[in-house]
Amino acid sequence: MRFDLTDLRLFRHVVETESITRGAERTHLALASASARIRGMEEVLGVPLLKRGRRGVQPTDAGRALLDHARIVLQQIETMRGELGAYSRGLKGHVRLLANTAAMSEHLPALLADFLAANPSIDLDLEDRESPAIAAAISAGDADIGIATEASLVPGLESHPFRPDRLVLAVASGHRLAGKRQVGFAELLDLDFVGLTRGTALDEHVARHAARLGRAMRLRVRANSLDAVCAMVAAGVGVGIVPEATARRQRRALPLAMVRIAEPWAARQLTLCVRDSHHLSRPARRLFDALRRRA
Image (cartoon, rainbow, N blue to C red; front, side, top):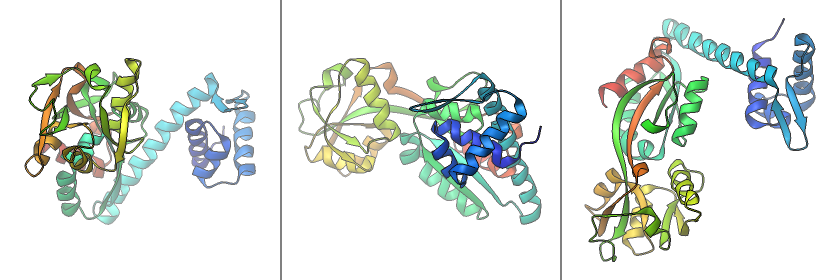
């Protein structure tokens, strides 16, 4: 059996995008070359790896088995590169970190700024994802380190407490809810909301809970940051759901009030997660240790 790393990367991208065309683009291959590589893998193994349909491709059972092995091999290659790079260039490396919106906006900027200043030869790929997607990516070996809500973690991950992360309702100080101590989420769905840009982890998290109640959020406007959400809320545009740390910081300068949301999903604990800290590359281990020290 003779597969090269390009074959494995291609197959992973094809399955993740459910498209040979998009998988080829991600792997920087021509479509004809990508198709030939997939056929070659199927011929060598003697089994079909993909089920082809009008809406794209899905892995067969054999394809899912190959995907699991491909992810392991590719992760090991990245770890090897990090280890060898540490010897040849001091501690040169690349770390992929996934975090939810609250961690990205409130908890990580100062921590990562300090870490990158102290480690100029380490590059960081930082991506905002919803917590369940973070847990799945770490479990699959598609990222080095994740910061996700504790409730979203899957069995087999190594996890460590990071920061509390309660979600609250931000309202203008003159709003009729400003004096309330807490409110149920269902009571809010007739109000106008200020939300985050579509596709951000917090936006998807809140929208999913509204959908579970058979409702949709009434969004008047979407803003590109939590600070912008708070500014529009303070101006009376609507109400917003933001991390408590954001609301506390912003109400020092803005006429804001915050109300607790009486739902279990609003009281969250952020957790640092990895597959196995003992098998991280040296650069990833250095970031992991730095985050644990500052938790």
